[in-house]
Image 1 (cartoon, rainbow, N blue to C red):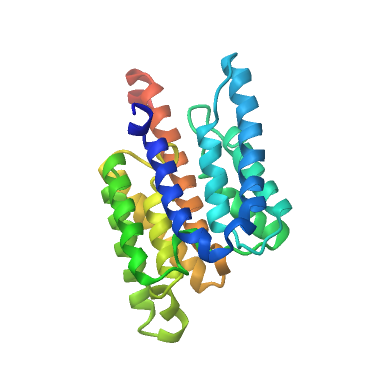
Image 2 (tube, rainbow, N blue to C red):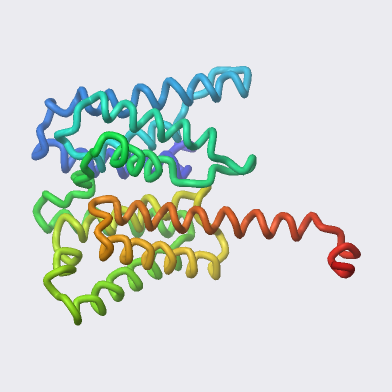
Length: 268
């Protein structure tokens, strides 16, 4: 029960609920090889890494989450080998692309863009319930609201969604046909899934409310511009990585300023 109070455990429960809804219509047991390919490489790599660092056996909860995100977002038609490589890269990016205090990019988002470039993989976001009846949208939003409240990330989520849909509303004034799909399934559900469950990733998102506002705004604008420029299915993921990268720079600058003696700052 104590474990279930943690955000990671709650995110696992939420993903389990979403998959329980989406999997039967998406292929049922035929998806088990893909699920195994998404989970096993990530958990093995991160489990070994954590256990060696801690000098005791550790269960890689974060790697399990990474694998499930990859499984939920990659197209169901992708081979298990592509899924396995993507899952492995997600975990490795978390361990390699780091500032020493936290990883820079959302691991799943980074790996999914990598897979798109290297393998030409497709992202269908089927785990966001985009192919399910509209009534299930209530479950997606309710779960997202619960997690955003638990993580104290409402300013981030609301800013992203307001700017994202506002951006495409303005863009529709010049070419409604080009952006109309952004307000339809599965693109609507994908944007909600990303806002509630990926942008709010604690290590790669800010805690201060002011920072959450500019972070959500930047992610939304980057995603919108990427979509209009023809980035294809990865436009949402580009928004995440752009915001992650800027946040890493801001964190570094603040730490440097905090570590600089007051006298040295005055002389400078």
